[in-house]
Amino acid sequence: GSFMFKFINILVPFLFIVGCGMKPSIEDAKLSDRNFSLEEFFDGETVAYGQFQDILGNVSRRFLVDIKGSWDGSNLVLVEDFKYEDGAEEQRIWTLTKTDGNRWLGSADGVVGTAEGETAGDMFYWAYTIDLPTPSGDRRVSFKDYMWMLSDDRVLNKAYMSKWGVPLGEVTIMFEKN
Image 1 (cartoon, rainbow, N blue to C red):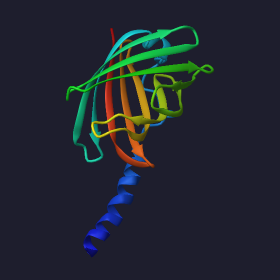
Image 2: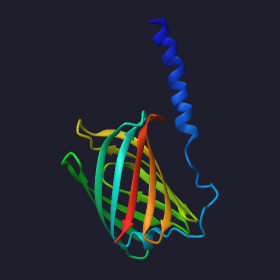
Image 3: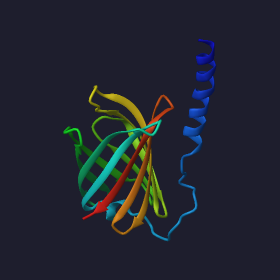
């Protein structure tokens, strides 16, 4: 009993520190001279391939997303149709509003409050809390997404998922513009 207690007292703070300290930042040096324009990249059809890994690195869910985007000059609407490898399907419709040069606000069913983000060079940072549908029921979690525009038709997304500040895992997604 005592060994396990000591082990947990060491492991939990370690995981918390690792989970907090290893994230990218919107302030990071840019690796290209691209400017990530969400409204240009996501206007039209995009397909995304992704997977979720828990905090221990186990891949527990894979998915494909067909995204139809439309930009009207101030709002970007993204209709996301998810197909999970386990056969489950889900649709999420995001409405993102450009508030000034590089800041965005967003909403979608299940999102608690308002999602907030900003672009800087070839990167987009996006943060929100959502009641995420899972096979065992809805789960309220927070996401911090970091997206990098790798080319005119490809964006890499790394999302860090947590609950009450405790890291749960990561979602890695590759977006490809059709």
